[in-house]
Image (cartoon, rainbow, N blue to C red; front, top):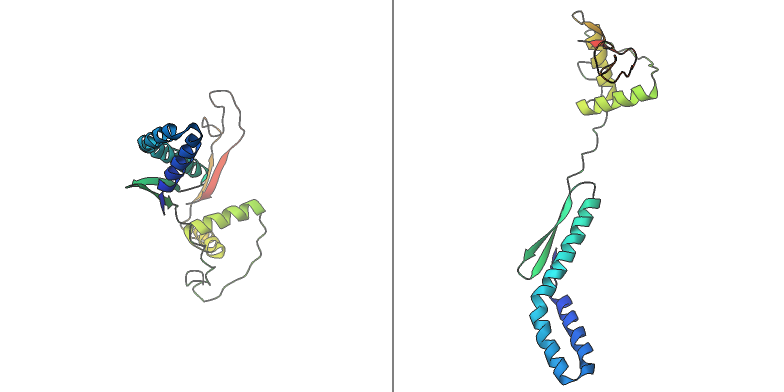
Length: 179
């Protein structure tokens, strides 16, 4: 987008000359000469004001920004934003991995706290899978013959659950899962 500030400078010049008309012809001529001499300073002041406005707009934007560039006697505005993330993929049907060797699929009802469900949905989305596929993968890893159940007490480690350097007792902390 281009912006020519010349019409604004010309409008300022006309207003100053019109104001000087009341003082007589000598004041009018002096004002005309003065306005031509002030042209570069007036352009610079307008450019600085527009650049400041662009900086304030950029500060209010959540991402991206507005740049102002000088192109001859015109200003160019460049608006840049980071592209939005693509919408999540629709749930995928049962994959070959989800189907057991004999081709049977079992349906279960799982009751879990809403916060756990939300976190599981987030993890599934991050991995690019549906919640169902992600849960099957987690359960499969936990139930395979070579799975190792990890249960570690972190309360004795400073800053992770025991007494930290400031004497803050955070209680018993554990890390559990399958590897």
